[in-house]
Image (cartoon, rainbow, N blue to C red; front, side):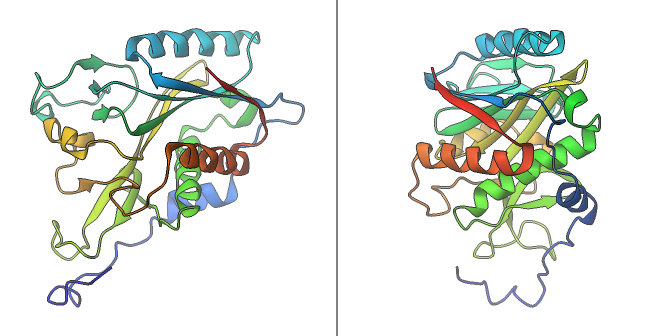
Length: 259
């Protein structure tokens, strides 16, 4: 990618956020010995958001009761906005554009829609580690390793949850820093140490749909996707990369189930 020569001397890459990097590198999130493998489910088509929330809540309760295995559930949603527990109403720029769902996950406003892979993560942290910060770092590590399979360098930022891609070919939006876009978001909720909600990676969504919100309350940086970065990958390719990287960070996965 071409550098912007007039800015190249003034721009330095942001300092590496050692804290969460260190957590992820030294504390992979494997379960206790003897735990059953995580169920891996992929739903075809578009999944209704409220139906997904109801399914997650029921499954999280069953995991806590010991009557269901942990689950990672991959879906796509119709176009919508969700508001996390920290959402600021002024960040909803176009409230009439798409349905807006209030949700109990952490974070602010985000967009879901076709071309974005949402992975709902229902894991029992009592089997793994009762440490929310380490769990978020592990989710980031999962995304970073997934992107690495496509030669995309995803990075953490200590002051921003999610995964970011530096765009040196673009003019900076923050003086003294390179331009960077968010490619993946994280928003989780825990109930009795069982997680639900999860991550979202942009494969090929309509990026203009983010214009109706201030994504995650961050106005100084943009959003991108794998296809926007020039990678002609299919959703199935992304799903396989997610599966392989998940095994590295979180451990064994059981037979796939495509719904």
